[in-house]
Image (cartoon, rainbow, N blue to C red; front, side):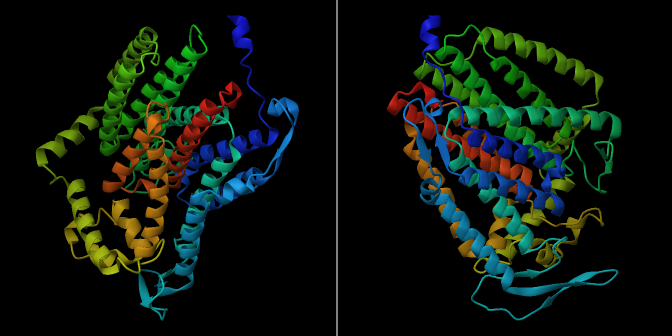
Length: 491
């Protein structure tokens, strides 16, 4: 048996591929720690990191016989990049945003007390924007955000040639999220509103760890729970395929429990409910997979022991900390049937955003311009401000806010990109049993979250979501290639 295992040696990774993994890992790990990357300085650093990763991925690679497992060859990433539909879709979106930025219809002005918009001349048939300070937010800030995501997507698509680097990236993301969750627990118990014990959070915010807005933290940890569960399934499958007696899958289940505990502390009701839906969906997928693919599955005895152990720790922690706010929030939501202040405010925000969309669906208001024009609509409902307690900069629905900013043409570009991804996965329908299918379930919960909140306005959530989608696509592609060539070294 040992002789059989030794014949399936994996080929070493090319140094440039290792460099790509390092660059992408540093970028993705940086995002949540930089206050969710919602500040201008963090977005500029993110763009630099994304550019470095993309530049490394574009370098041609010379494989020697040890790295190729046969004849040496040279690999150029350019043909693969130019055949990648999302490269052209993303490039079209960036050009569109540049046109918006160069054709403003409003100019932001202010004095010591108030700000206002002044109408200026623009080309009426071109997409438009608001001319505003970069630090406050404008089309050029949005261009940086979209450009970083586009570079990250292209880097993962052309820079990774094996499944092992994808697996390593998932492990790094999970490890980073666990450290972030522990930092959040410490902040919650010791510093309350002081992020990392150093930065005081703005008023009317409920920070967790390094996220200023708690619902962004909830969306991020929900994504990473899906990532953690995926890694548990991958490790369990590898244990069976390689006939090992044990695997680290139970450690990832423990990590999922830790991140689930973070969701409870964050008190993001939407994230908690969607995480529950994710676990139900995952359970159904796992049951169906076990019925149709009996050789796949988790080591149930070990996992039950680990789950029991961590449930015991969770119960002890729950008895030691004050989790009463969770019950209070859900009880209020149930009893008041949508009349609770937060829910009522969001209903009015949605109503205002729908009116705004009906006025600007064709041309859009411009990338990064939503918060400047939205007050003209939400002001019709003074009760939404709750006597000055709230200020509405977002519609609390990315499904409304993004179309309002991009307009018809911009949305058509996004839908084209989404169609490319959907068609890819439809063609891979025979691979529904792949572990990375769990990533798609987790990514779906973020899309659902975006209907009643704005998770994609946080680059940390947006880029992680994009990365997991591309990792799933690349994994399935490599999995198919491995089965076609029967080459065990592909992984």
